[in-house]
Structures are given as structure tokens and as C-alpha cells.
Length: 410
Image (cartoon, rainbow, N blue to C red):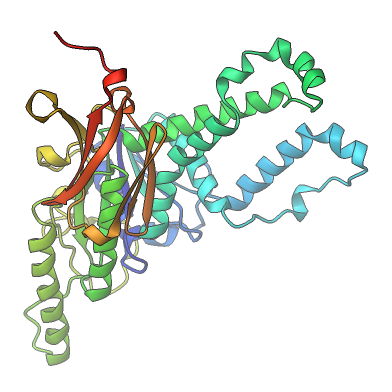
């Protein structure tokens, strides 16, 4: 399944570009699902008469659309947990809550989106186009499955569940109750669900499509987001400058705005063009509404290449993810200088914004406002960190093998 994750700074028109991308795929005979995290849903852009539902509804032949419902997700999950803990709640004399009196808590949107992505990944779709939240929020959501799986693995290690038969005896010896079996079972199910979402995000057929209205604010947001995209190993297939004004207007005020946009576009082409193909979308002179407008956007002079999600952008070897979907690689230089070098592409990153800490078998990486905890490969765990450098947009961490942990060579 081809997956296109559409995001960008707020107000850039990412929902419109997502809808146009999905419609273009459907027009090419692909069975396409447009999934929106926007509370209002893409119904207005698609010309739908009613708000979209959680279950996919066919908008036009080949195109289905659905929206994420955080309130429904929170109610369902809370009531299920309440039923599971019924015995303990009854012992405490607690009054159970009804679904009608539940409203979602902050953070429900992210978890609801992850669940929707998991369900979509199991569906019979050729193309999945996801209208994600604004850029910073989208990056947080896309990094969440890996973070949650790490927390579950630390708090409830799967290997401890194997000692189920010993749990009563261990509880007596320790004098404290041991976690119930259902807790480990629930953690295992959650880990499986998160793994499915993580596999979707890291698949080679999944790319991020950035939408931005040309201007200084969007440029700043893109520069910051580039660090997060690189750190999390997310591939960008296109940068879509949206709402681009015509350059041949006789109106002086409009011509000035168009000139400012063109200056920004020239800067973006120079800064990002080698890694992110640019596909500008012209301003229609009105808010796009209905399938005809979306066809107009994705036609000649519109979205062009990225309107077809089957077109994967050509990328250089340095930006190509490794076998597990990660962007880094390890270079064996033991014969030359006795080192293993771990490299991570960070184009545009500043040395002052990069942090690196070794903690056991993990590396704690910081790039600007973004953080990631990376498990080290088996070979690197038997090494000590001897230095690091950021050169030509690539972070290189030097590891020195510990003699006592490496086999001797004749």
C-alpha cells in the first residue's frame, strides 16, 4: 500500500492538497482512502453534504473518506478499561461512569489517530492519504509509536510474563502483589498495535508530503521541521508551495505579493530542491470546494507529479533509509584506524543544536527541539564512544571497540 502523509504549517492548505492528492489517485484507478485528523474533516473541500464519519464513506468512484473521532476513541477505551477493573472499582465502592458523561482528555487526538492508522493499514486500499495535524504536532504523532513501545518494553518486559506460574510464589516472597496476567496481555496487544503503525510509518512506500504557503514564517517552520524529519527517518517525497499567486497581474498590490512569494520560492528551491522536489500549486482565487476544483488543482500546472502517489521521489544514497527504515548506517573502519563510525544525515543542522549522550545500550539524540532514543546495534554495544562531529550535514559518531569484548584476530 502506498501511503502519503500530508502535513505542513497551520493554514497552509494541507487538507486541500491531501484531498487533491487522494482524488488524483482515485482518478487513476487506485482504491484510495483519505483519512483526516482535522476535527471538521475534509467534507467541505470534497463537496460532501454531510460531515464525514469514522467509517470510510465513498465520495466518488474509487475514493473513500473518513475522519478521526477522538471523543469516540476515548469513550470506547475508557469504558473497556472500566469493565476490566470492575472488581476493584466495586470493592472501592466507586460509581461507574456512563459513556454520555465522558469527554476526551488532552492527548486523545494523538492516540485516536494512531488507532485510525492501524485500522487503515489493515484495510484493502491501494493508496492511503492522511491529512495530518500541523507540522510540529504531526512529527510528535509519527514519533509516538516508537516511544510508547520503548516505555512498554521497559515497564512490562515481555520476558517476565513467561514466569506466570511463579507469580503467586514471588508475591509471597516479596511481600508485594505482582502484576496481574491481564496487564501483560494488554501490554502485548498494545505493543502489537503500535508495531503495526510503526511498520506503516517506516515502510519504504510511505512518504511525507509537506505543504507550505511561501513566506518567511513557513520557511522558519520548514527549517526546524527538517531536523525532526531527518532524526525520525521520515522520507519527504515533495514540498508543495500552496496558494501561489500569478506573476503577471497588473494590480500593483497583488504583483508585490507575488514577487515576495517568488523570492521565497527561489530560496526554497536552492535550500531544499536537491532533496525535496518542489511542486507549486497556484491560487484559484477562491477557497477550493468540490471535486472540480480539486481536479483543477491536480491537473496541468497544478500538483503535477506528486498528485500521483505512485511516483516516489528520487533520493540520494545518503538520505536512503537503512534496512529497518532508519536513516543511519555504520561504517567499519577497524582496519584503517580501529573505529566503527555511526552516521546520521542531518542536513541543515547546527552544531550547537545537536546533543548526544550514551546511556547503556542506547544513544540519546537531540537535534533542536526534537529528541530520539536509539538502541545501539550489537556491535556498537561492545564499544565506547570516542568522539563525534557534524560535518557537511552528517553526524558521525566514533566508536572504539573494547578489547575485552571483541574476539582477538590473529
